[in-house]
Length: 261
Image (cartoon, rainbow, N blue to C red):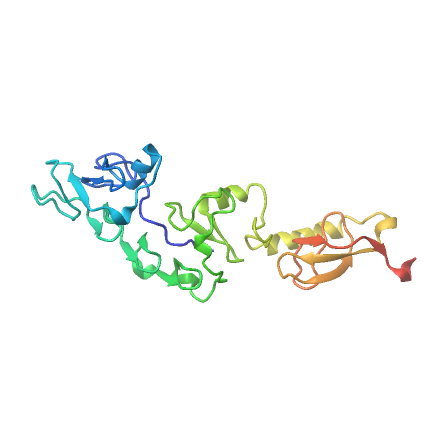
């Protein structure tokens, strides 16, 4: 499914830019926690044993004339533009990336704004093509990524929305697909597996079980539709009778049908 809006701060071209690897800007932030000057909160956090609260920043230092002044978009001394985009709430300075401040998220996102909407239940900005077409989970963005266990809501890495509604960092999602296909939280298929299931149908049909297993049945639980059914045991997989998914788990012991004993 389409990604969520990401927090502003993705690395850009290093050549011809001001500031740091995170942001293109013409000023330094004066950290209210330690009074040190850093290009951005990320540079601060990477070098200190505490975090900079972006919302409490009051002063900045111009990189051109070095004058310390209250946070604003243009230097009051030499008129240097600190950032094409400036948010007076987040104190975010950067080049123009069609950013917008989302009041519900509480931070700035990379837009354009018209391409995203804020889902109040999920509590995050999602691409417009997901409006009315995604599974809502209460405050899902406030949970950490189940792969890397790091924050999703304020991450500079794009989040990927799974069909089950859970979120992963896009990079974590891509790494997960190298090892498996299921959501690490609920085991629901993380992508459309229909084509693979039909291929598995053919493999099952072409791989008859030994005679002692041909009449054996098992109880299964489907991870995709949560339905329970009793199906014929097969070493390659057991298909759900309800949604035809092979993403199933055996819930009971194997048994031979009474009419075949």
